[in-house]
Image (tube, rainbow over all chains, first blue to last red; front, side, top):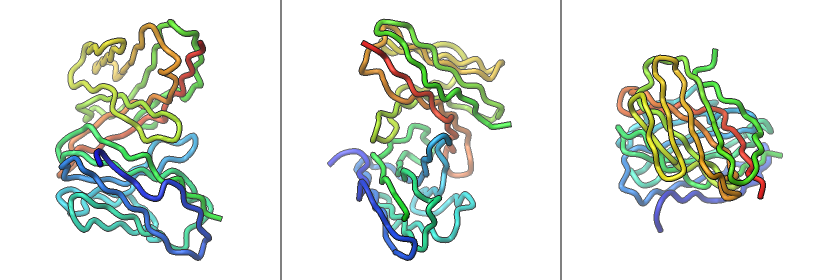
Length: 112
Length: 113
C-alpha cells in the first residue's frame, strides 16, 4: 500500500449512531490532517496533528473527536451527528514543515 | 474579505485551448503557492507549487505568482479531456509547528473533445 488510505469510502449513519473514520499513511510523514469538503465551500481544516500532538482544533463541534495513536494512523470518531455534517471528509499527510499535502480519496458521509 | 478568492466556474473549453485559472489572496504571510487537481470521487493531488514571484513550468502547466498584486495563475496549454477536473489554488503560511494551508473553493474545468 502506498500513499494515504481512507476507510470506509462511503458511510451512511443515523443521527444517534457512533462511527469512526480511519486514515493510514505510508509516506513517512509526521503531520496528519482532517478536512471537511462541502459543496460550494472551500476545504475546511478540522484538526491537525504534528509529531502525534494535536496542534490545531479549528472550532470543530465536540461531536467530532480525533485520535492519532501514532504518526501513521489517524481516526475521526463521530457521534450524534447532524444532517449538515454530511460531506466528504478528507485525510491528508505531510512533513510537519512541508507545504505539499498528500490526500486520501475521502469518506463520503451521509447523515440521515 | 475571504483570505483566498477563486471563481468556482464551471469553465468549459474545447480540446487544445489554453486554459487560465486564477486566484487572489489577502494574507501577506502566505509563503508557498500551490495548485491541486481533484478528479471526481478522488482527493486533491498536488500539481505544482512555487515559492517566489515569477513563473514555473512543468510540461503543459505553468504556474505564475505575482506577490505584489497578490494574484496567482495556472495556465494549461493544449488542454486535453483528461484535464477535466476541479482545480484548487492553495497557499501556506507558517503556523507554529506546521505549514497551514488555505484553499480556494476550486474551479471546475471541462475540456470538450
